[in-house]
Every structure is written in structure tokens, then in C-alpha cells.
Length: 179
Image (cartoon, rainbow, N blue to C red; front, side):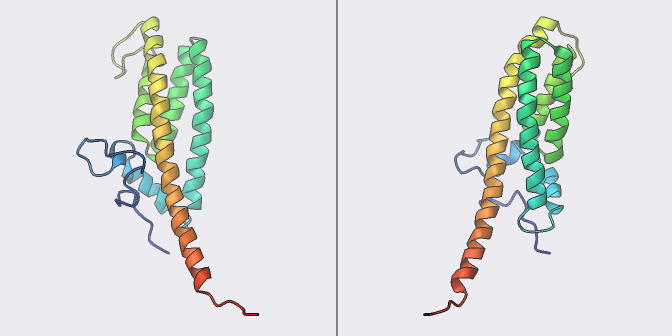
């Protein structure tokens, strides 16, 4: 079985091409975005170099997240804190499963706010305060999600491009029939 590329391998995967280093001194752009250990465990489940298994899980996550954000928007407009807490909990778990650290952390805060607790889940806050915090947090978590989505799509695109280049090279070097 071919070796699985590790996510922390810069420069191939370590940085979204459109984004600069985030300036936090960490190696690679994705260090605060992605839990490399968790994501690498997902990659190790792949049976092939195409990463079909992990890619299908990640693409399913994208679909789930988009649906969940729509449900969060509705719950926020309905001022339904209980539903917002449940949705935050759900997306927190899905995000953790593929290693999305920022999204997971924001969803955990949303879960706490939905339970009318502060961001740590220890102190009570008012319903009005919870709704205000969730309103701004929801916009933030959507941005974090888009950042993660772009990073992961680039990751898989680079894998696909590498595979296509190999296939093209093999075709180019194969003998052709002459007329």
C-alpha cells in the first residue's frame, strides 16, 4: 500500500495558496485550522492514493455543515436557544471528527450560549446576551468553516492533480500505434 501523505508536509499541503502564513509563528497556514493528528488518522483509513474514503467523509461533512448553518439561521431568527445549543453540539462533533479545530471551538461556544452559559459553560448569562453572542458567533463560525472548506478542497485538489499528472505521464510515455 502506498504511503499516505501527511498533512503537515509543507510546501505541498501546508498552506492554502491564496492565504499567507497566519503570522502566529507556527509552521504552515493550517496549524490553527486543522488538528493534523486527527486528519491524518482519517487519511490513514484510505485504501488508495485517491483518498476516496476520506474525501467522501469530508464532502459529506460539507453537506451537513451547510444544512446545519441554514438550521442555525432559522433557530436564531426564531430565538430558539435550545435548538441552537443542539445544532452547535452536532456540528462540534462533526467538526472534531475530521479535525477542524476553529469550527469545533466556535460550535462549543454556541452550545454553551444556547444553554445560557458563558463561553466556558460555567457562568449563567441572560437570554438576550446569549442571542447577541450567538448572532456574532454564527457569522464567525461560517467564516471559519469557509476557510476550512477552502483548505480541504485545495488539499484534495492537489492530490487529484498529482494523480492526474501521473496518469498523463504514463499515457504520454506509452507506445502509440502509427498509421
